[in-house]
Image (cartoon, rainbow, N blue to C red; front, top):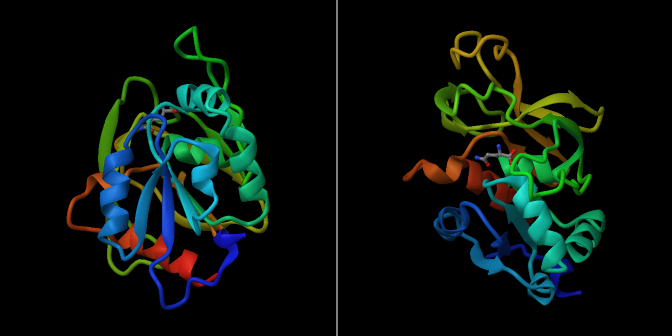
Length: 219
Ligand code: GLN
């Protein structure tokens, strides 16, 4: 399959799931990070990608759309076969093995059906419904210097399996949200990466996307 070709030396093709949410920001950040980025709306568009990004948005809505666009099973199969993936915020929820508080928020969307690509339990809207968004500086393993992290109705990771590396946590006074200190907000398991926050919204800092592109290249 073309997606299994070696990518060393060339720019990897990275698809961004483009059913809902912050698609354009990820496409732009990937383009600036040395990848060839393309939106994914149809199953056959997955055929030539070396990696995939699941953007932020609303995980219940994306879950419903994945099924109605007949993308859920093809993407789950590619992920199970080792396709590198990066999920931000709602994308983290979709990659998880277990979703705590899985929905349905709107009444019309069913609960999230996650892909199980990461051995983690993720709690949706974990920082409390009263806090729609906040920003924090984080140490991020594999990235030099602090990362400015934007959280929008974000999840956190509540349990990690043994194969999962924790890349970032909320610092003791990092969020102002009670109970948030020490919460896990970035993880990686092999070539699957997830962040509770949105690096794609911080213009001029592509370090997290570059970390993912490097992970895809290393395959
Ligand atoms: N609260 C949303 C969800 O659980 C995620 C929000 C986001 O992606 N910014 O799907």
